[in-house]
Length: 484
Image 1 (cartoon, one colour):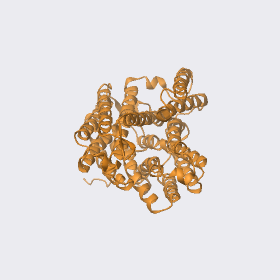
Image 2 (cartoon, helix red, strand yellow):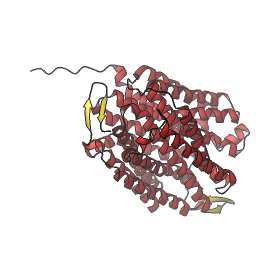
Image 3 (tube, rainbow, N blue to C red):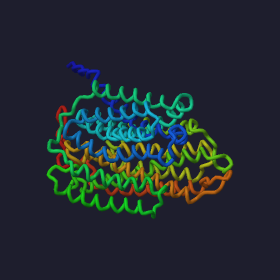
Image 4 (cartoon, rainbow, N blue to C red):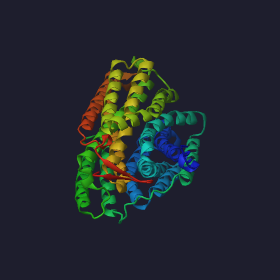
């Protein structure tokens, strides 16, 4: 009996995953390209270093606010439509940066670019709606790993452009890449038929935005303004009050921005806690490694590398994340995403153990960073799978948006914690205070301990549905999760 030949998928369908992965990599690139510019921007713009730092802070704040908001908008109005809007805002931000040297315009433009933070959760939700189950796991794993891949690619790319061309060229390049991303999504990605209709929760959006801005502004600026200063204490107090009122409002809203009853389920809530801890542990690797290898050789441990060389040191971690994303999908299929997440966090901790054992030799630094990158791939790939298995199909974008938000908060706290540790452990080199090796090793130890905590939280997540705990009713275009 002849077996009928499989019907070939149209070219557009075959390009859906690569196009969405391109968008995720581009989002991560946009978050890192400004880093090589920071030392020179005060001279180039005539602004103070403190003002220039707002180019990073503005992106962080807008991304934290817009990720859950755009995720909810995607669930309501169409994920492809909102994804294109997020990429368009990012592209517009690059164009503004390319056209201006006014620090006020640059900060506002970087805030626009923060909209790209919603690209990954929106893309993961599209993959759930559009792909058959046998392709979904590997695609989601790849989509999650794009965060690390883009971060590893962005630094050397930007450093090379800044070193050999006018700094505005870098933003023209990202603007062109962004326009390609918008066109690619328009051409290759179909609009998802899964919607969660209702009225958009404007009060909830304003409350969450205000609370998150106060919280993350306090975390990001605490080192500069003083943790005990009136401004920082006031910001944290305001964040506590506003977020408490927001929580109360969300529980009473007919169509809340964030379904807190869903978040309160252990399977969802613990996944968000694990995301926060994993975000902390992952981000410390990039922060500390970049500073350590650029430290002067006079410190006795530093390698005195340039920003371009530093980017090349971190580059292998990005390729490792790309290579290991299929492995993460296979482990999740065989053992469940809960086990994959716990394993990934434990591997991150092992990577920091290597960093503590030897952070003087370049090859050992790269090995330790690569191990952390491997663990991050496993953990980040498992997190959205946990969310997809635990929430209704109509809330996947908003739920993954909250999960990405928790990672962002973890990264912000990691940045503040690493800065606080390094500031407290310095010694004079050439008349300037430079972090000591002990300070770096202490930062590695803290990040490793947080990674072990993330592993413990992952193991406490109940009822892993990836191993058969949930029955699936499959159709040609969607999956209904019974008991999600």
